[in-house]
Length: 409
Ligand code: F6P
Image (tube, rainbow, N blue to C red; front, side):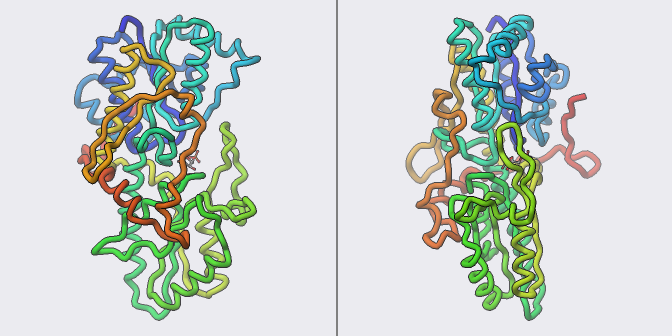
């Protein structure tokens, strides 16, 4: 590659988004790329020419290893949607001028379905104007809702955190031998798709009873049935733990979290901030049953927990970044790297690349056949899918008893 490259991170961070950055960086180094620029705060930073030279921070293999163990988006993230091309040519002209100024030949964007829209727009514009720059997407999202790819880097680590923490919560909830149970409601991220909440099913095993209900946004939330089931569980068990997606909705389209008066903030992608359904449900259960309740929101913890990230996920995230650069080197543009899984019991994956137009802005839900008929548990199909992805750990680099991170100053 003769020119320089630039890479950005976008959307909600994951525990392994920096592994993908490490993959991009390592491949570019291998190809002898002169400057490896990072967009500071994604495409929003790009528009302000807010760049950093990643080589100033990542100087050797040790730094690459530390980057892989660093949570959040090392470069800074954004939720910013490029305007439609028609009528906004000036914005796009400016972006290509910036690329020419810094001699940027390829742009890589690590993100989810909204972020892939950026790759689509830029590659479409380049094609329309006969520009030679290339644009390749690197999949990333804890939500696991990108289509085409079997799964998304970031998901497995969040799933591992969720299942681990849920096991610990269930254990704690069971510890008191009182007459009346405590009902704990655990709220899990994943806006419109229930992949993350489905991960609650991984907690169940020889040493754990698992969650008593798992409520996904794919299933209309029936408050009456929910309360009926909670009352039954409370009458028959001495501990009740419920896993509920932040995105559960009533049949009339209202989010359960909105019943508590939240969900006012809307981001640039038009998404409402969903938070608070565990509190709404725990309060309702307490008011109607008189039982002790707790609301636990995993919130940012589930996407920042690098200390318990899946090694499989870390390695795959790295590969996706690495392969994006190699694909661009081979002339690909307007595409995203995918993880393709072979049929059969053994976990075997390979990496592919796919047209961004089939991916950007599309959300893939949890398949209906993986949800039990009553809509409150997750079946074997999901467990077979997810278990191999959460395998392995990477020891954090501990300093003074705490994990060390790489910081951009
Ligand atoms: O898109 C990933 C995600 O983690 C969603 O699961 C969640 O709804 C959202 O981001 C939260 O975003 P923010 O941190 O901007 O509130």
